[in-house]
Image (cartoon, rainbow, N blue to C red; front, top):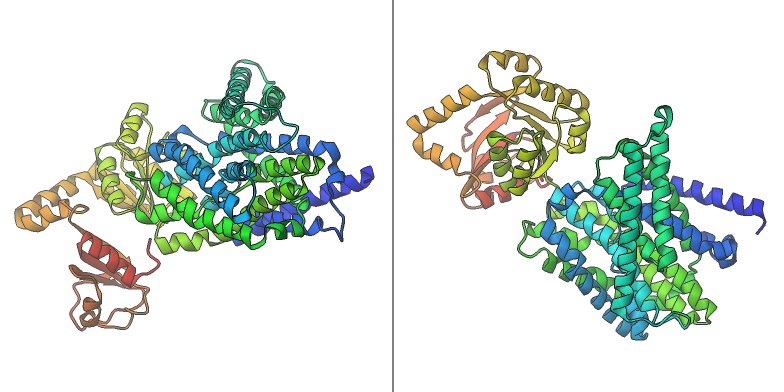
Length: 619
């Protein structure tokens, strides 16, 4: 292809990739679906827009540099605080879970496609990788609890590294030109080389960012370019030393720099994110264009069977084992079992392997490798990515996000009660020691000043329904309330008022207030006048619950309380109905209307089921 034609082709692929990303954002599905579809179309023999000769020997270099940027960017966003949200599950997913995925997939490929064990293990290794390129877009659409997101993100990033290395190790047994080396030695060598180069490059970049004058006027730009250069150098140097060690090097450098206190971090994240989207779209479309439709037909229904076994048998098995004994709900475990789409690492490595196999005249093996891997990527991205939101809503794993500013006794006690009800709670705490103590108690903590818009945004205020200002400083609580009300689409802002004289200032802003003095008085009065209910209320979350929820169910609207009552689970009562700002205890003949807020009282599980009855969309 002429140089001008190649330039036009590359520009066109990038443009199509950007349009695909925009369309994916609007439809809230992973863009990878469109990338593969476009690639299959432009790669068809009738069009001849892209062939294996289009990029020539430069293909592996282009793919390698793209993978370096993508893997580095994903690891850069993996924070230790996130991993701490589900440390045990994350570790098991990248160890026990990876082994189950490898063995299970290899067995499925071996017997469904009737290929040798060596090739089955290569395919099994590649399909261990889920990857942030497909998991992250799903988590943007489905705002699950931090512990769920942390486990899935950690699995995706780390398994990208191990999958690439394992695939190369097993490919040594398939490729006639590969060197012979023990499996353990080959794996450890590549992983060790990657870790070493990643640590060295991260250390150099960190030193330059912190201690070298980057030209004040251009410092943010220079910092971005320096980090980009570091990612590419780490990948290339490690790859030069040992094939596919570059993936581990890029991931290591990204993780270390992402968790270091580096200047211009926001600029770097923004730059890397945009660059990654461009690179990802180009590489995925280019790789998919090298896969012919008849290649997918080579594996046919047997390939579909392999993907079904991966998605519906192997994935649930490894997920249930990896999350056993942890804090995940049954719905969360099922959701995580469903979300395991494959991404860029299987696509890139499989394509490069296929090129090598075809050069060695092993065409059938190349077609089986490419066909199985791309079929798995396409089907898992299409169904798991496209249906993730609906599955999450059905399993009720999208919680109400509550942000509590202040990790003191009040904040932690409130977080305990909310989490017991299944809500997604993030505590913002400025004091490092208090934050670590709160995190050690099992809560999700954002370290920072809650009066900062950036800190609130980092904690998830853009997706929060409620923000609670619970510090011991009324001025800080007032500022938090102002920021949450004006800068974020928050349903309710509630503030603790330590000095009763400040109540009017809060209420003038429309902020719901809880006066510490009045709250104590109410609690004492309840113990005096109504000790039974007071004792029961303080035990909410253990034996009982009280919940207020809006009525939306057609099965309930228009019916009197006497008919709705028997529809509710046993030990669940309608205590109050609020309509047009007026709250009253309903009579048996009171007709429930659309939009009514009803208060349910009863045993915890009964109340939860009752909430689903009157509002099926409740989270």
